[in-house]
Image (cartoon, rainbow, N blue to C red; front, side):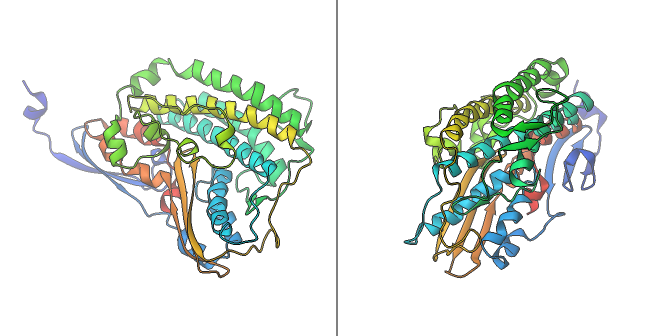
Length: 398
């Protein structure tokens, strides 16, 4: 007997959001339900629209750098990286362009991979929060994130909106010393040599933290029951929807911009592209865990480059850090951000401002597959599926 049919329940349209704790910001989902089963889901965006791209055409090229911080405000240094590369490709069209120095590139990759760790710690913490486990995973993620943010603050002057990269390098070198309130080596020691602090963080503390995340969560009965087989996105659908980052790689597509179109010093670094093959919430969690380990592997190699380049220039630009000459032309700078491929399409007419400026944001792109992941599941599963995509509304609406 088909109990569902005999009950003859009405279809119900439910609005989840835009003010709802599970939507990770001002985001709305219009859900059509048959009982508790999802028959249709429509993402509704635009509640946070900030006109980022049009403002970017009003600003000078360098004035856009702090605006990129506000896209995905948890990954500001990676956002800086993509924009800097896009403009540097335009600068390379001119005769006076000097590419970033090796030390500048090493610092850029250092910051990008620390940012990936910060973002994934936060992402896993939020996913566990969406599954109902609030305190322990979130507090654990916050504690490890604070270690990295202390390093960011000492180097860039800010913990989140870093505004650190420049066309031709970075704004300043790593400091000799930093102060950290996080308990790293000794609770009574707050002032550290920067390179010693960095070594302790990437060789000892963060690898141990990733292993503890794995131990506590991966085989946890609640996590496995709520995540395995939920929100499945097939390889074919992931490609068709142009999914990016962990969402794409969890569906069995080993695509990573750092390997597909290598940039900076990534070609000389050894790391593997993290990939899983079931395409569900659980595999998206596992891919992020794998990527954290690969980021640590990269950071340990970068540490040696930083030691070898101490004292070398961190900026190679000519004509000033804040008033570079940008030749006329068009370019696309893209990086593998923690949430996927982040791209900047920039057109210059030779003036002080971009003539056209457009951002390809991975959070926005990945939401296109949300309905496909949710069909046939229950309302409670929507919260976990959305959390596994790891969106940031500042990047969705721009």
